[in-house]
Length: 78
Image 1 (tube, rainbow, N blue to C red):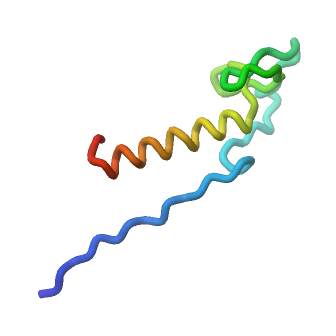
Image 2 (tube, rainbow, N blue to C red):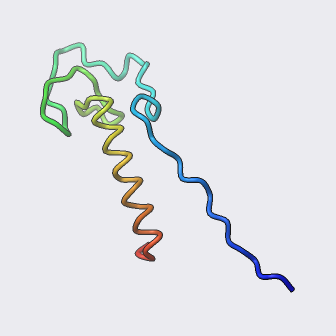
C-alpha cells in the first residue's frame, strides 16, 4: 500500500487590472468625483455597492482579503 500525498493546488497570483471588470457605465459617477473608500483620493469610479473606489485600490483590498483568508485556512483558523 502506498501513502497518499496531498497535492496542493496552485495559488493564483493577482495582478492589478486582472481581477475586476469595471467596463460597464454603472461603475462611473456622472455627478462628480467622491473620495475613494480605500485611499481617500477623489475618483469618479464606483464599486458594485455604489461606493467611490479606485479599481486598483479595490483590487488591492481583494488581494489582501484573499491572502488573509488563505493564511487563516492554512493555520487552521477557518
